[in-house]
Every structure is written in C-alpha cells, then in structure tokens.
Amino acid sequence: MDVTGIANVATAMSEANTNQAVSVAVLKKAIDVSAAGALALIEAIPDTQPAQRLPTHLGQTINTTA
Image 1 (spheres, one colour):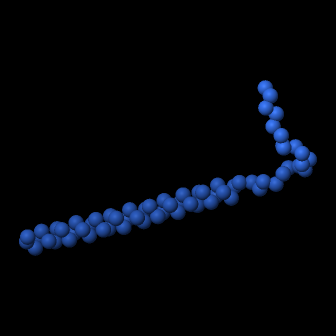
Image 2: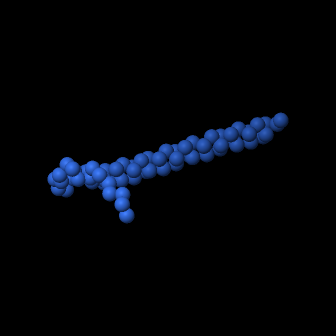
Image 3: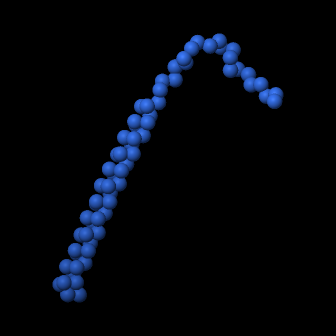
C-alpha cells in the first residue's frame, strides 16, 4: 500500500468519525427538544382537585341493566 492509500484511509476514517459525532449531537438535540415538549405537556395538565364536594356514596356502584 502506498502513502496516498494510507492517507485516503485515514481521511475516510476521520470523516466517518466526524459524521458520527455530528449524528450523535443532532440526536441529543432532538432528545432535548422532545423532553422539553413532554415536560410542557406534563405541566399543562390541570390539578385534579374536585370542582365540587359530592357525597361519598356517589360513584360506588355501577348500574349494569340496559
């Protein structure tokens, strides 16, 4: 193998390493954006406090006749 062949292989390996690093950086950014969106959705969920005080016996039975 001559010197230019070795240089070509080294260049190709360097480019592959750079491409992989860029891909990982883009993936991390996409995950961060997705996490921020999920956090915004979670924070948008309203509190589950009852709107009114209902008697405790309501909701204890299910009428299954049609």
